[in-house]
Image 1 (cartoon, protein in one colour):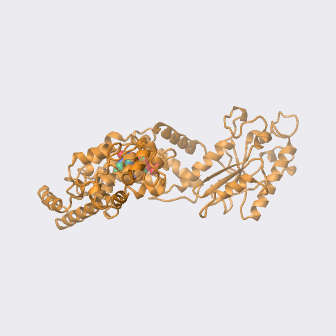
Image 2 (cartoon, rainbow, N blue to C red; image 1 turned 30 degrees about the vertical axis):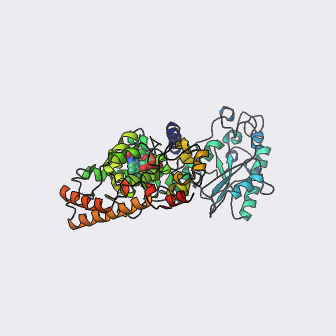
Image 3 (spheres, rainbow, N blue to C red; image 1 turned 45 degrees about the vertical axis):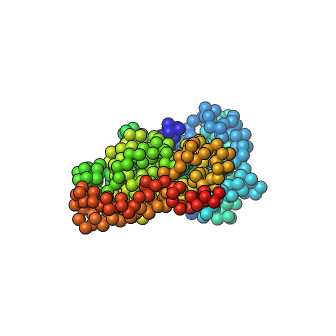
Amino acid sequence: MVVVVVVASLALFALLAFGPFSIFYSNPLVTCRQAEQVPQLHFLASRRHRFPATKKGEESCLGDRPLEKDSNAITRGGNYFQSMSMASSSFSGSGNALMWFRKGLRIHDNPALECASRGVTGGGFLYPVFVIDPHYMEPDPRASSPGSSRAGLNRIRFLLESLKDLDLSLRKLGSRLLVMKGEPGEVLINCLKQKWVATFEKPKGDPSAFLRPATTTLSPYLKFGCVSSRYFYQCIQDVYTRNKKHTSPPVSLLGQLLWRDFFYTVAFGTPNFDQMRGNKICKQIPWNDNDELLTAWREAKTGYPWIDAIMTQWGWMHHLARHCVACFLTRGDLFVHWEKGRDVFERLLIDSDWAINSGNWMWLSCSSFFYQYNRIYSPISFGKKYDPNGNYIRHFLPILKDMPKEYIYEPWTAPLSVQTKAKCIIGKDYPKPMVSHDSASKDCKQKLAAAYELNKKLNGVVSEEDLKVLQRKLDATCDSVLNPVHSHSSSGAKRQRRS
Ligand SMILES: Cc1cc2nc3c(=O)[nH]c(=O)nc-3n(C[C@H](O)[C@H](O)[C@H](O)COP(=O)(O)OP(=O)(O)OC[C@H]3O[C@@H](n4cnc5c(N)ncnc54)[C@H](O)[C@@H]3O)c2cc1C
């Protein structure tokens, strides 16, 4: 799976690097002969379009491959016009839709257009696009009459007039037709990829989307130096040059690379960056050394399906998924030392990187960089927000695959009859939650508050003895970590008792 994902990323990367597309401004035949007979096309990106505008006169470097050699299913076919008789395609995603006009060059009675417009949601845009394949449009001096190797001038002219007419119809609706040039499948994919890069925004993105990850998945390539970060930076800049409207750091894709360099820089200048002791940017916190808790977390046996599913997705994980499990292990629930979690990640992630890994663990545990310890990821509601049906859990924890969706994030609340039907008895086939999130997170906040207070009082110079004293004090008042969920009155336990 991971291999497929990273290969796909590399393909994206290659497209970004080698496949710039341009908007087609004029018909190449004009330069050939009978210019006066051919309609001039000046289809530029209007305000309704958010595709990149290229410099006037810039030629596409795509599309000089013969169609027959192309395996693209959409454009495959011996004759240009026959291939266009296939249904127009539409693409939708993130509220926007792309309508690829092929042969249905009209706005009336056009099911594909209707379908595409239904894909536009929440202030999104519909992008009407036509792609001119140079193979069918470029003048062929060897042909028996004026035109390309496949089409005579009259037929080309009729097509161009139809495009102009379509553009006029779209203008009346406040839009315009965007005409691009190149091998159609390639041009469109490249165009969408560029748009994806330009609008990339973290932390937006679904951490449960494992088949189509929401981010680039380039981290292992950057970690091992298969892709140079400078080269990646240049590719992003190229896309930004073409797309004036793009997101900005810290949330943009460029921003992500800057985070990488940020952690490299801080790590370089901070003695003992990878540990709590002797690290002057790290808060001194009396974390526990409970190996039982650490092992349950590492082995995906916490009893919280969202956490356990993530901990089963070894190799690569989405950023927010890392947030959830790191928070759960440290300041959210188990109060285990961040260095222990960092070590587990270091061993098992394919992208594990000394500076980035330690830096992010300090961030997530509120030891450095980020200090809002009251903001805790819920191991129940956070994943549910993205994936209410629990498909991610069902995939990575097949033992829960038949659990009804209302219980998939809290299976211990399912009545025994439901557990039996789902062939998953909680406590036997899948563990009970090791802590009650409600009380464990409350205790964690209390501990963090006390530790912050101590760090402040001692101006960051906290000795081991000081921490031990604090730990003893806290252990006397906070004991939720040692008590599993059924002994607490969490909403889940209440539901279980009712059922
Ligand atoms: C607890 C924890 C541990 C982490 N450990 C690692 C690690 O060992 N190695 C690692 O590469 N990333 C680590 N990250 C950061 C981040 O989660 C990954 O870089 C990102 O998820 C990789 O996916 P991507 O390549 O699709 O990222 P994209 O979002 O596509 O970002 C592109 C590149 O920017 C860099 N980047 C993105 N986010 C961060 C970030 N928060 N900090 C630093 N650089 C970033 C990475 O090089 C990444 O490949 C960690 C995050 C957390 C919360």
